[in-house]
Image (cartoon, rainbow, N blue to C red; front, side):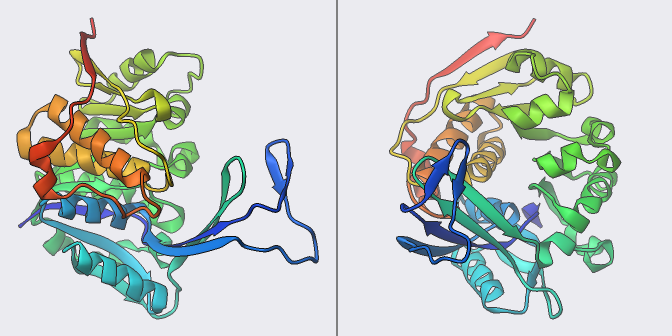
Length: 321
């Protein structure tokens, strides 16, 4: 029996840092036909499904990852990280025909651009999932889905509901914007919904609403806990009767890749360990902050031994009505 099985992307993340680029408004420009010096390059494993799995396991949660990688070196690196963090890989398939997904994260002076190569994890099929075995868990964590794999979102939620498995879901903007995903019809079956502010506003089709109003709109369909992250403005959690406004835990930011994954993993781990929303809020914020203090989506994560010494986070609890 697992505590959590995660689903979602498994990628190789290649970080390229450029300084000699031309900035034009919100774009940076590269010379056509020329050569550009890369000042620094680093490679890490990434992808929401494996990021969340490794973060949960690092906090002492018995976790497995269900997804797909290619039969290649990037796939081997992902399996190596799953082993490093003690994530069970029994449901991770190796595809001999589709390469492992790769993300190129290009950083320049002001921000970054991500180039994505769709790979094996984006083409997981229903027929490739061992449904008999994955029912042996307490929770499913559905990290952002893309491409063909997005078609499994409703299938997994329905399967979980029919087998008394709780669902934590963090749908991608890709899923929210695709009409055939019909995310709203699935909200009543989700126990923990995790979104960033932009995703929440697109989901509700109400861009001018406050984050509190947005959470209330979502609540009309979703009976579970609603978490909306707001970057430097912290996060808001809504449990139907109270809002919990969480301040950020300030750190020197090295890389924001994986911030949402480490936040979501920390929140679910907090619920599993203490069944207390304020504890989950604190654990989520600290885990995310430590993660972004280092480069790479799986570095800097909180470990189980550190839970005894969690720093205090400012949390304001207010009645919602």
